[in-house]
Length: 228
Image (cartoon, rainbow, N blue to C red; front, side, top):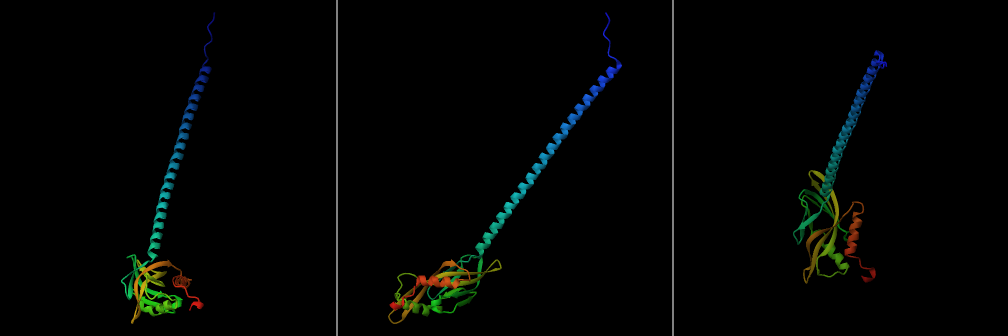
């Protein structure tokens, strides 16, 4: 019986070459896997960085928008004038409800029915009964209103105020009711006592006089000709 033939040197070289190629292919595959993983990690890192930048930008935008809205609201509040009055009797001293506002001048316009010129003040905002007392008494008489008040009567006026806020100039137009009382005296006629003011509405320059006259007609409607 003869032995099986041994592998030839050529076969050994072929097998070694095949093993070397297999190891090379495996190493190349490992390198490709590492490259692919690195690319994925790079994409993830770029995505996270982009999201972080967008989040920071979004937060800054929201903060800036909030600050801008707050500034607009503060500016609107600063430009919104509301007058209050102190004192009583023959005159009222007016002042802004906000201490940040400084009145420079005012013009007080009366209802058309009183046929009065506007009263102007500078640096000392006020309302004086002498500006309208005679005309108001005449209008009340024509309307056959009682000689004595049962409470506070109201006279609407249009007040145009120029004022400053942090050095910036503003102008406000508003209709106010002047509260007053009237009492009759046997020898001395009638006297008017001023009580205070109350805001009716802010108005635009166009149509301001019409708004004032409408308020006057509501408070003191004209008597029909047949009743006079």
